[in-house]
Image (tube, rainbow, N blue to C red; front, side, top):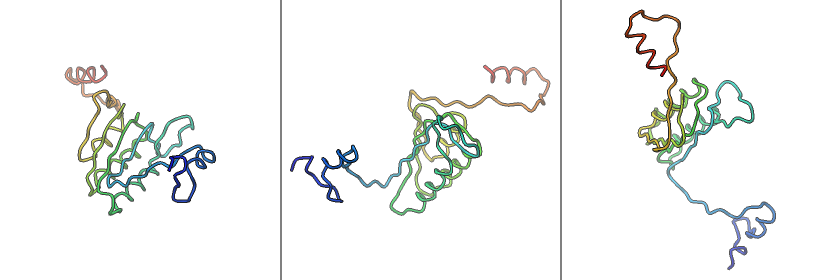
Length: 160
């Protein structure tokens, strides 16, 4: 049978799928490892503009709960390429990942900046691609500075 004549589970041939939907039947493989991506900015309590690439924490949290409860899923692969985002949302995701009973692995591709760092290291095993970067913001001050030269030198190094 030619590929365009193969039928899917609904009886549609690949040719009918291409004509009707512009796609073919993609082979589906069952895996016991769930891969989850966190890309763009982590959107939390504030809604970001539509042109921003975002990952919404209200979508991630239920997925993590479902992964934890599904007996067919044996582990989680968390793939990150994020510029950071909402701190509280990121910390909630990191707490969920850290508290999972199933094995968790994180892989940073591109970037894992700001609140992406705690999410990345919340997994049991964390990996970063050689070309990826992770940036932690310099410290922020409340205005209270201990007046000793060592403190000034430390803050000066942090700003560099």
